[in-house]
Length: 90
Image 1 (spheres, rainbow, N blue to C red):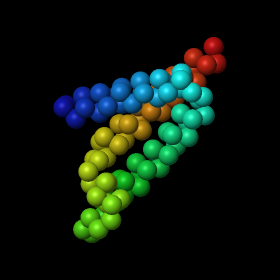
Image 2: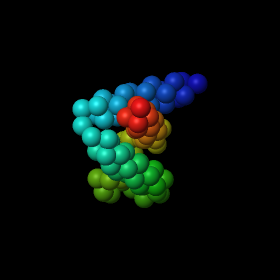
Image 3: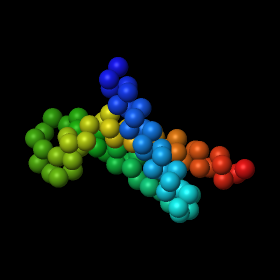
Image 4: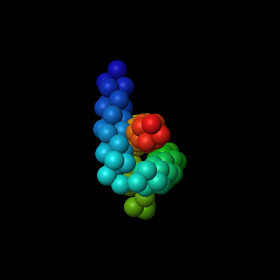
């Protein structure tokens, strides 16, 4: 249950950050940042699952940032983006 609360808290902070950035800048910037962090999160997940020793900086970073945190950031970011898009259409 602790991990669920941690996931929700990180996702909430990420959604708030996306909303604040979307209000300060253009919505397309929030979209592209979300796309980049989504791709990096997937790459980090697969690098974290490799059996090799952490030889490269990317593998060390993937080990440092667990999938729970990276996917919580991605989920929260896209929820924030959806909220921005909803209110911009009104």
